[in-house]
Amino acid sequence: MGTWEQFDGIDWVPATSTPTNASGAITVRAPHTVTVTVNVNLDDVTIESGATVTTSTCGTAWVIANGSFGVKVFGTFNANFSGGSFGCCGSVSVESGGVVNQNAGGSFFGPTVIQSGGTVIGNTRSTSGQVPW
Image (cartoon, rainbow, N blue to C red; front, side, top):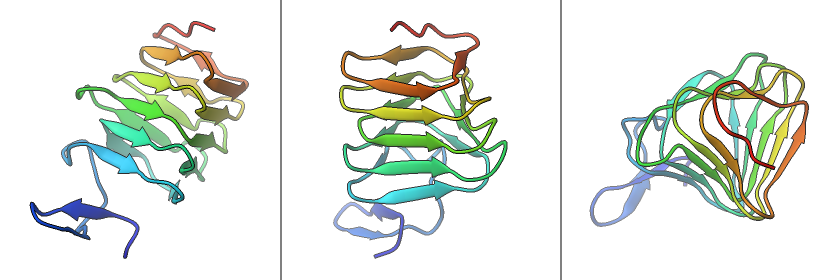
């Protein structure tokens, strides 16, 4: 099994490419860890409890398109370098039990909600969204 699979209507099969915002719903399943090394355009992403997504390059961003939802973090998102961020324009929801570790310079650039029991750690700023905590 590779890092990414896609449903072909009958079975889960190895994906032919890394998912994008044109891929439909994307789920990072537990106990998988995905390391993002380039800017990516995504939407409708769920990070399950026990799953981890990590940005590993300075300036790496998830640019969130405006799908049904942007990103729901039930697991862990690590922005390990300055500039690691959730970009425009979809929403980010840090769900109960979810953790976002933002290094200095990391940002949320869209509507952001930290649900009860969700955690954001680090020097994080929001530029256009609401971050109620």
